[in-house]
Image (cartoon, rainbow, N blue to C red; front, side, top):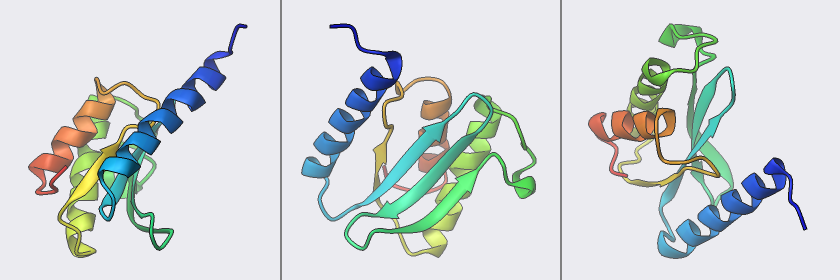
Length: 119
């Protein structure tokens, strides 16, 4: 029974997310999405079902439009940490989705930690 890459990715994403929800109940979720051309991050309140803050490499203010490299990921991570503080959030758990915690995804987490967000 061969699964496609997409099916395996979805399976991995759900496994990671469900485990994190069990261990971090009541905390905000910092969710990362990485595509071939961009990277985006959302700070989500799962209880209320609302996005409190977001940052993306598509924003012109960050100066990395259309880039998907470690430099862009670092700027997006710093921006989400700043916006989380404005929203009154100090701690969150990092939801890497189905992506490996390496490279750009790790750069987002490190930059958010340096910005003062406790992950």
